[in-house]
Amino acid sequence: MKKFIVVISSIFEFVFYTFFMVLIGSIPINNQALKLVVHFLGLIVVALLFYYLIRFIFNKIEMKAKKYIYYMTISNVILGAIVPVFLIIIIPNETLTTLAFLTIVSTIYYGILINIMICLFNYFLSNRMKKLG
Image 1 (cartoon, rainbow, N blue to C red):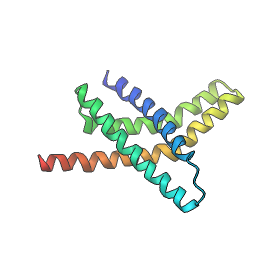
Image 2: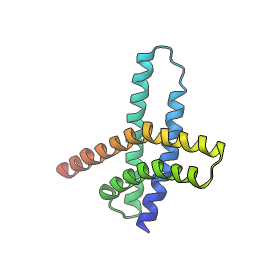
Image 3: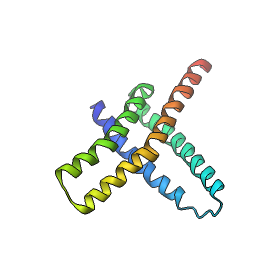
Image 4: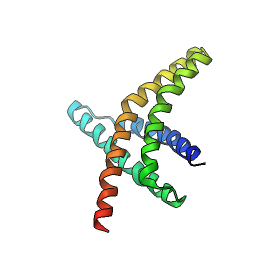
């Protein structure tokens, strides 16, 4: 059951961070340096938001949030990179190939950065909480 929850949460994480990063990317900014700063600040904010949301959900269902957040981030990258390739092999369709390619690009571009930040937040904020309390 815990593996199922980790897989479902990684799928929802993928959908939501793609949605949020597309929203952040659609902000009309003419200055390229400012656009880059806003984009990376958006990555940090989205990762921090997901960290606290996932930690809250895992604590509510009595899973060890510190341990299972790492599993969720790893499964998110694996699912985002491997499942689209299988879909291309199984169902060779032009539209599905385009969608799978966009999924892979989103996983590489957003997924890896956001999941690394979530892991860093998990490491530093969980250890900080343990040292304080």
